[in-house]
Length: 194
Image (cartoon, rainbow, N blue to C red; front, side, top):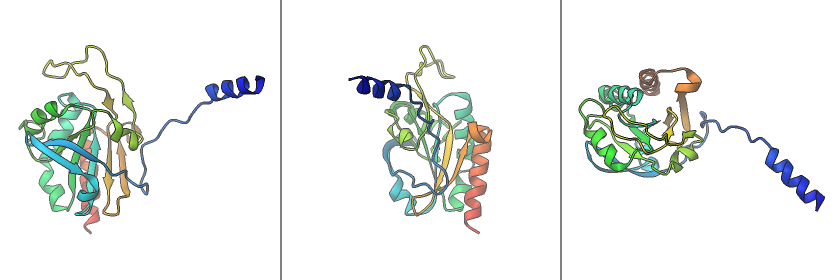
């Protein structure tokens, strides 16, 4: 009995290492998600998308918040350059599909230039080893609407045709602003064409 109690205490005291976002060379977990493109329903599957070329999978905390708005706007402004480099873009957040429909069509942000997907249960984020901050009581977006979901950390993955992560860019680890993440992603995918 003492051994069982001791084993239980040791297990309870063990410190598990913090998860780190997937790195280049790791297999990118395939996922299918419902989302929005220009305010309309959009179904996304990573494996189908990578069959056509590299995919920029960018996770962001929430629609209609400062950094996320700037990042979405920068992706929209550069959508043609990404397409010319043969890359697709998919944004992923814990926002509801209803919120994404509005954000996706908003001419100030996504402007219907690329799809965004809902990871409301944050299972996709977990499969990429991303941290999720629990919902904060009373948190509001720039429009004054309450945000009732957790925030996924801001990390961008570039996934190749073979389904492996080619590049990981993190706001926290790489000290990149939301716009820097877009610029670095574009430079990377353009380099793949050479």
